[in-house]
Length: 154
Image: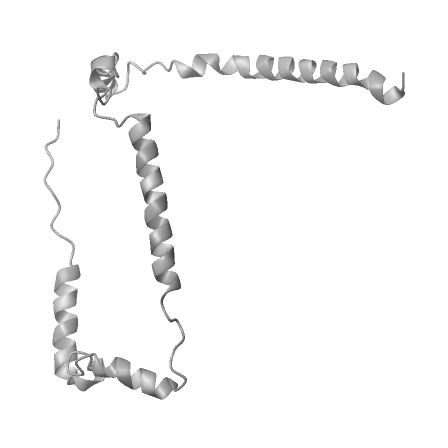
């Protein structure tokens, strides 16, 4: 038996000792998961009231019911195969498209520009400074925060 094979048992013992030490070290934190409210605090009655009101939450009755209208596995398999067929049909349609653009880029740009209304595509610079300022003022009014909501204090 080689030295490497004999050390296998030593590494397992080391891990066992390390985990035991870790459990002992974190065992002191168990009490921190059940905090006590300071009785002299002015918020103590309200805190205790909230804790008592929510002590049994969540209940199984609060969870949604199990859905009953789920499709059967055979229906899901049929839907998946139908999607596969549709995907194949779409791939054949895409393969049939001629993706080669015209050799003249300026003619291509002009054909695109003919499709759009130039009045609607006018740059912002075509507006007067007064129009720009009026537009900016409407945006500032829209960006103002709403008034705060009054919330009842208990």
